[in-house]
Amino acid sequence: HVTKEGTLAGPRVLEHMVDTVLYFEGERHAAFRILRAVKNRFGSTNEIGVFEMVDKGLVEVANPSELMLSGRPLDAPGSVVGCSMEGTRPMLVEVQSLASFTTFGMPRRTATGIDYNRVVLLIAVLDKRVGIDMSNYDAYVNLAGGMKIN
Image (cartoon, rainbow, N blue to C red; front, side):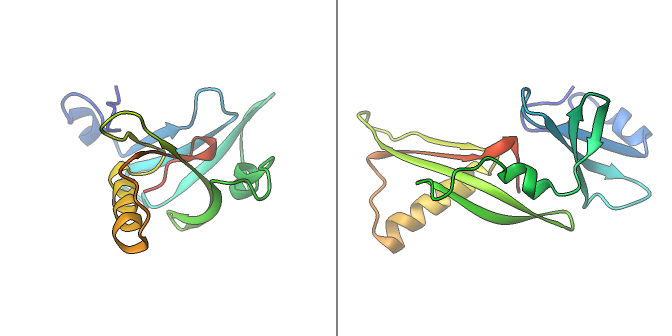
């Protein structure tokens, strides 16, 4: 069982007994999955594998950046392509953001696929250094395709 934080629930006995712990990540309805090593006694945990579900089962995706960015509209407002190192593999990811005026006293901050605290930090930088007052705006940040980056 995996908790919301992404760790194994219960005693760590099982994790200590095995040589490798792998996580399959991805959105439920997406065609691709990411295989991430959390523990590997005989190799690096600094690698990921990207797989796509096809008629014959899972097959490796040779160029995951191309898959993540296919069908992306060009020059879409609130969307940018960035490079993230996942293990030793550079991957191009699409970051989508939206700021919307809030009618409530406390603005909402939402982050999917990216660290929430990093998003809050970037909003504070926009406020203090760039002069963009975000105190009356909800902020939503999403990594397209169900990706997760650290």
